[in-house]
Image (tube, rainbow, N blue to C red; front, side):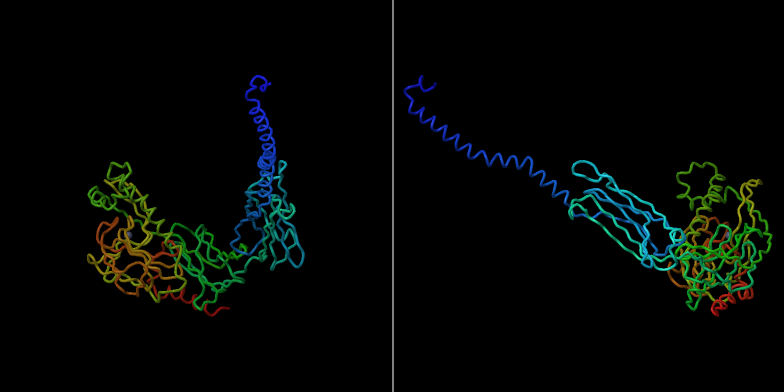
Length: 481
Ligand SMILES: [Zn+2]
């Protein structure tokens, strides 16, 4: 129609029409591959990408903690499974022993959608291995585990992670045989027992009420023969439970009674008079610990120190004494501060009087020895310095580890001579007496402890007591059975 109205330009029109035709023809030729590319981009590429994604080859992760390969009467195992790309499909655990495989657990996980992806990305599974219920014998076995995911890899079989580990079934409890005969102990007293173990044990020692005293290898290095120093807290009585405890590597535990006799003991009473002058004179040392406490009166501040700070300081010592050298550094009787007078005994039941009234009660857990001011203090016996710093009521405090759980401590010092970690010989000067901490005047507060329990130092100053109760047992442990 256009050509009639615009005759003058018909040729052009024809040319134009021809041009359009050619153009359309060309466009058509060019459009086909483009459409294909678009179709490819819109449909096939995503599919290809999806296939590549779904063909991923990352294995599911399986993690668990089995610190010991020994399995006792029952062992709970917590296993964490993860598969972030395709999701978990299947998990299986079995035990193999003498060619017989026993499945402990088999679990299938669901999948959804046309891509059949797993819905479980991670899961924690708890299984209980009870060897006797599944007819496993004591001895070696193999723990096998396999996790599979929903990947399309391996023609849809998925990625697998498989692991095997050797375990040792041990359902028998260890047997502890006591090698020593006489074990007499009084409240605040110490003692020792030697025993042999039928198999290696992770934990063995003496349980006294709620406190455990670990056994140490005997001096010849025979691992099956052990010696444990133990103590009876000064507040306990003849009704206290005392027994040997041994736990093997699989967690099987035995309690073994051993002959013992608990003596009775009466402790002395003592009265301590507290004045405002004494309290105010001591406060600068406790300024830091009292900061943040809304305590106004001097007496309230004193009571906080005498109760709360005392308990905190003792907790520090108990923690410090959980570890001791597995040997006896010491030899013979322990030394007493030379030329000194005893001012307070171990176990004294103290009543604190303030303005004539009883305000507090505490037990004195050491012996107070007074000599000249700033007297040199000898190490009571050979050992390793494990503490030399200021600790609350004890002031400047030094602690020596003599091995096998036996420690001595020296409180209220004015100075230290030896750094932490250093070995000191019996009689070597380790510092000077003073009145740091909650001390009224210059003196040495001397304590002995076994694995964190305060004991009466008197026993350790007595040569025949040491021989009868300790050293002859160590010797006996060396002879074996
Ligand atoms: Zn004291």
